[in-house]
Image (cartoon, rainbow, N blue to C red):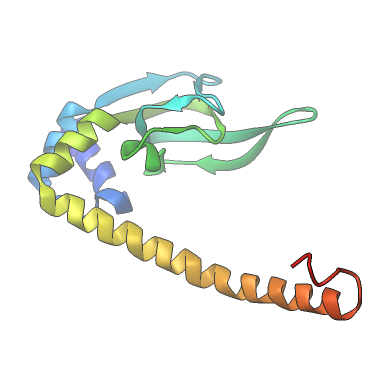
Length: 167
């Protein structure tokens, strides 16, 4: 695939959408383009994550270990970024990723991404703002659940199911 096509794929990723054409070109040029065959395990659950993987072509099955082996929990197709958090901080992979058919991927190592945001501090600021907004939205979405749990706890105390010192 050409550099122009890689740039177009990277531009569709929300985390990278604020990057200028030149910044995307630099990122695409510096990242690794990799081809995988059907059944290849891109990474396993619990592995140290050294960056993100963009699915450029093909399909990736995301799987969790179950009692009878691995179970698919999701699929990632072209334009999906696996490991967004790993591009910013040290973390572990939450699931196994297996290629379904032929897959072409773009690997963006954390060191490369950090170098990009160090050289372009305005990107770091926009990333910070975007992540802060997402965390705020998540907190707002969880607020009714917390309130409901509080209601249930109060009900349990009133019904005598829990002692007042438990809560």
